Amino acid sequence: MLAAADPAEGITQADTPIADDDVLAMLAGLAATIASQFTPPAWLIIDEGRLVGLLSITALSEGVTLQIGYGVAMGERGKGYAAAAVARLLDWARGDARVSAMYAETRTDNIASQHVLERNAFVRIGERVDEEDGDLFCWRIDC
Image (cartoon, rainbow, N blue to C red; front, top):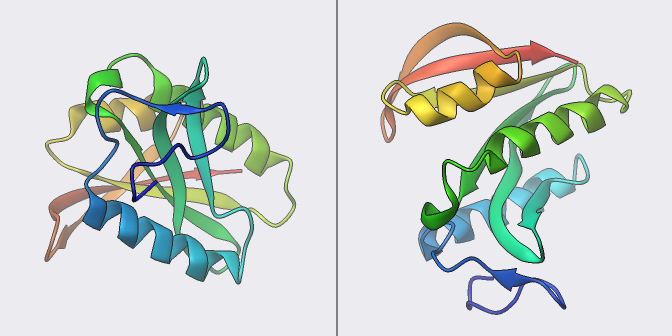
């Protein structure tokens, strides 16, 4: 995927990139680290044979709480892909005895991402400031 190759046989990529190469490399590194503790660490968001987004575990904490992140290709945003992917992940997590909760963070100005979490019954539990990402809302849902 980092080399702009098809991610799997028969699956094509969206017309616009999901993220830049630096972000994809960071996610690949996170997936490799998480995979040593918890699998699967990431999922592809596919619609009609096209890769339109990614959903990843970005961290684990005691209990096991999965911290998640997601992204959808610019040209595919606003079509409900992220909300549907998070809903499917929640369904999966509720059937996995290892998972007690899910956690996510959104920038305070990222209304679309906040709506994804709200539609999936995440509750805003606080705020924090990240040196790189700025002001963030913190979200959680028990599984």
